Figure 1 (tube, one colour):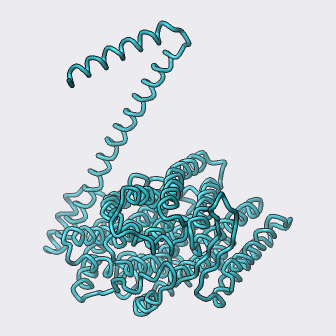
Figure 2 (cartoon, rainbow, N blue to C red):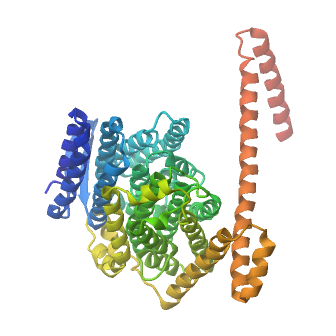
Figure 3 (cartoon, one colour):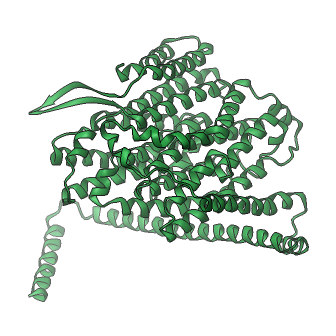
Amino acid sequence: MFPLLLLIPMALSLAAVLLSRNSMGLRYVAVGGSIASFALLYFVSYGTVTIPWFTAGSFAFNITTTIAPLNLALLGTVLFIGSLVMVYSSGFMSTLSEQRRFYAEMLAFEISMCAFAMSGNFVLLFISWEFMSLTSYLLIGFWHGRERAVRSSRLAVTIVLMGDIALLAAIAVFLNLFGTLGFSGILAALPSHASPQLYLGALLLVVAVLTKSAQFPFQEWLPDAMEGPTPVSAFLHSTTMVKAGVFLAIILYPLLYRAGVTPVIMAFAVVTAAISTVSAMRSRHVKRVIAYSTIQELSLMLVAVSGGALFAAIYFFLVQSLYKALLFFSAGSIMKATDEEGLDRTSGLGINKVLYVSTLIGVLSLAGFFPLSGFFAAASTGGAFSQNLVIYVIISLIGLATSFYIFRWFLLVSKPAGAEATALRYLGQPRSMLFPIVILACLTAFASVFVVFLNSFLAGGYGWSAYLASGMPISISLQDGIIVMALALVGAAASYLAYKRRSRAPAQGKSVSLAAAHRRGAFALLYILSASFLYDLGEGVALFESYLNGMFDYLGHLLVLSASRLRRMSVGAINPYAFIFAVSAILLLAYALLVI
């Protein structure tokens, strides 16, 4: 079956949404289009299809689609999560005047993401890459009446555009070097040793990966993107679009490895993981905490890719989509019930038992509790670096901090609700919002079985993915599992002592907590000291970050001031130009004499 036929139901739904005058029925059209495309996956088989587009001189530009195991997995993830997002949105987006624009933009994004997932060459990849950037810009700034939303959308599109330009430059380099834009052709023609041209193209590709997947120093656009509607955050900025950079790094891993840039990816990913972890610990916004955890997990995926643990990265890539969409859906339900976005002001999650239990499953998975899918993702990623003590320790500490901050998030949103109206809104959650949450909670609980079948699934590589057949399979030792589980327990206990019990008693300073910990024993003291250390570490990094931002602001103001002063010299008069020329000539002559 021709792969692009998958897009027909969504394309027809998009046309119906744009042409329809009945805002009430648009949600059903969007849901039906997504589900129909997902159902068509059953008829798709492995293969490559090439469509001639146009020629420029002697080179023919073609649209190439490829369905390999990894393409099929990404397509399934996009269409399944997309269908649930459309269902969730039917309850979340309650304003009729917003329906047409919202569903049109969401369907346009889903189409572009599916086209990206089945890309077999750089032509289709770049087209879909650009459409993802455009629709992301529109959806982040969906509520354009809010100044923060408009500013966040501009920040996102500006940063992503840097990566788009780098990707276009990399495509030009690869076209000149290999004479083809097909992934299979490029990987088959890789030289035995890296040339400067290959290294340059790979570095440009790394810039594109870092910007799209929100890695240092481009990571701040993703937390700001939380100004968009929650379904957008759950779909674009957690489970699909932000993973485009990771997906690109996986499919072109032989090129990146041969060019020698995988240590560069690892360095940036490790730094990003540390920064995002600390940022999540100090954030007090319901969705931003989850956004920072997404950046952290993308970093760990790139660490696994750069270390050659592709199977572990792919498993992490797939199962993270389930529990992260679940947590974003839960955050949207919490915000809708409380009309608040700050963790200090949200409460009452336990009123709705279905929502409470489902959210807890997502929290336990993210923290790394056995036997949930997040445990196997963390254990397989850490186990891949068991011979590299530095990276292993860093991944372990990040796992400890992750358990701490996600339980902090859960405990703060679960505190007793003070208003009766909040309780009524929790109990009155639309079923269209609860059904996707329950489905994702069940899949998160049972997605661990994927680890059993993933090795054989990916080993049957096709086309560009044939190199996966000889990849490093997932291997989890008992020691790795015990360490992951122990760190998750310690982080959860520290978070409980730091936040749950503190919220029950009047705040009397840290000395009271320490005294209570002394009375409870050495373990309680260890937990509270760990929590205090992590909190103080977060505050210290926040202070350093503020100084760093201030330094860059000062540098920017200095450059603007210098440019404005220099601009005044361009007045068209001959005398200032003659003076500058004379001074420059004297300086050059003096430099020449010194060198000689």
